[in-house]
Image 1 (cartoon, rainbow, N blue to C red):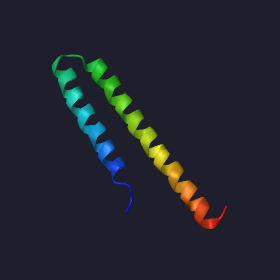
Image 2: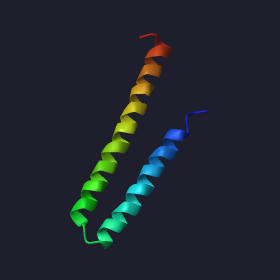
Image 3: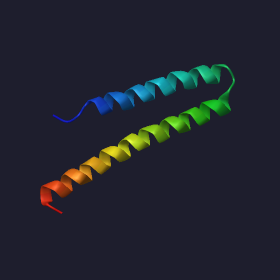
Amino acid sequence: MPDINIIFKIAGVGILISVLNIILKQAEKEEQAQLLTLAGVVVVFLMVIQLIYRLFQDVRAVFGL
């Protein structure tokens, strides 16, 4: 079974960023809210890049490349 923890981590980051984004927008800090959203996207993107790297490593191992 695939590692499902990474899905929960990504969902957790998304929920945390959403809540903080709402709080910042209500405090009229929209510029900081945008930067926070961008930082969240970068963090999730780095997680996905690590998963893709592991996928390619597994494919190389299967085919002996």
